[in-house]
Length: 489
Image 1: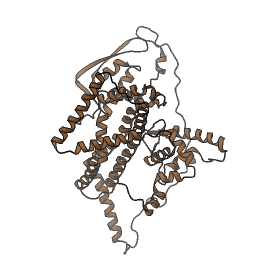
Image 2: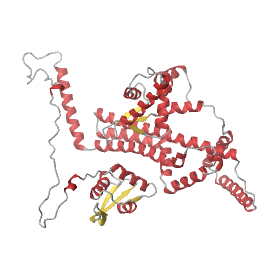
Image 3: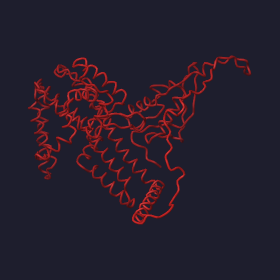
Image 4: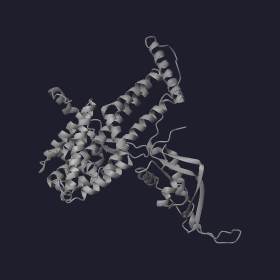
């Protein structure tokens, strides 16, 4: 339902809604231009603080050359922190679970403001016919889906079957009716707008789940009742969001998109349509051919937010933590009760003693400077062994760095079209490059979450070639990566 735009409501939006405050900002063109080219155009969900500050610094340098050195006098980090504070809320600043560097993400309100500004541009072509047809199709779909009379539904299906049979007969007779170029372009542009709007919807869904997660954490931190009452309230809110129209639609969309057959079908359709000459003349964004993978990446972020909510509830169910928190709260409440009792009749004489009545100050400049540890100097030497062979000491200096994030990306790509994949299947396409260190990294990835398991009953043998060309072998349990989380025993 559309809310009535009353004056009081509009005044409240004007002063509190981040989208409106962004449009009213003094440096709105600079801010919106930077956020558009940094987040929307490359379709990035989040960016680390240092790379984002470097991009903003380059952007400000470019603008100062055009508008003058006094145009934007502040530093890039000052602008970013201001855009992410509680007053503006155009960016979200957070720390990822696997890192200590803050990241920035675009908020749904800022994206909504940029989408509205994009609609102000005068478009040379407006697809009225395709939208009207879509309205009729939606109305027919609603009418057919809500029809309770079986005979009426059968008659409608028979009419559609007769229409399809007639179209098949026309094609067999050599009369192939192709879509006009204008109609083809019109529908392609409508598809492009809808596909990009889905990415913005994911940000809003993620924010709603994140808001629920924050509310749950606040309730757990301040709850004083029984555990059962809190769990009943939390699970009730979780079920309300899951069973809402938005929750049902998101889960249905996610299940539809996770189907490997649907992903292959989308890939084939996009490749064929983008290769059509009328569509190619529109110079479409080449990234559209992988738009469904962008949907998957955006959906994974929302799913991780839901996973954090479940993890928070699991930690709360830890009896030891709950009893410890209750013990601390009971001690604090006991102190408060005694303080209130003694407020009117303060005790006379010495009540308690302190070892140090004043805090001890330690200035930062009093601390010693950092001294690097003594690093031994190792040189190649002739080492005596049983057979007097010369051993190369250069091996002591060899350092192998294994990028675990790259290995996780290989697993995610393999699971896009399969329910599970084994480690030997992954290594068949790309063998071990860093030897035993990389194999240990694979085992760490398989055991650090709930998407990997070790099958002790079916051991396997893996082989790789070291830097000297010698073959090495290791015997280990069968490693399996799964798309769905493995249930805990």
